[in-house]
Amino acid sequence: MRKRGLVFFCLLLLISLCANLYAQEPASKNFAYFGLEPEIVTNYLGASARKLGYVRVSIELMLEDADYLSVAEHHAPLLRATAIEILGRQREDRVKSLTGREDIRRACLETMRKLMKIETGSYMIKDVIFTKYLYFG
Image 1 (cartoon, rainbow, N blue to C red):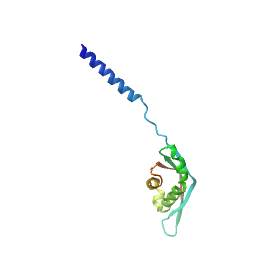
Image 2 (cartoon, rainbow, N blue to C red):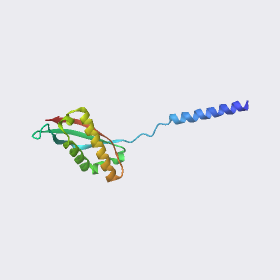
Image 3 (tube, one colour):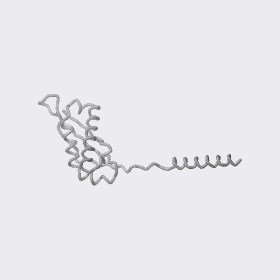
Image 4 (cartoon, rainbow, N blue to C red):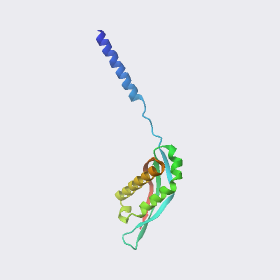
């Protein structure tokens, strides 16, 4: 009888501990967003050497923590220049296709993260979001 009581007590203790673990909310991230202002307007390579198009993009950076807002603001010129450089190297077919646009976004994300790691010691950028993406040409 004592054995059953001990097993029953251990089961209740285990259930109680498991319930407490599941009841606790996971630590929420304190993400923040920083917009690269003003919008980026730059040329891209057209179908021929004589033809250039242009793209107009609004970019929001999703930062891993709100504490990085001032750091992102300080490095905004570098981040803008990076986006302009990446967009300016693209060919027309990549700019105009959905998969190409996603590749460009990922290239911006990877390059900006590497630069921030070098400059600040932290990757700090969780994601790059194109909130407006218009092209002509």
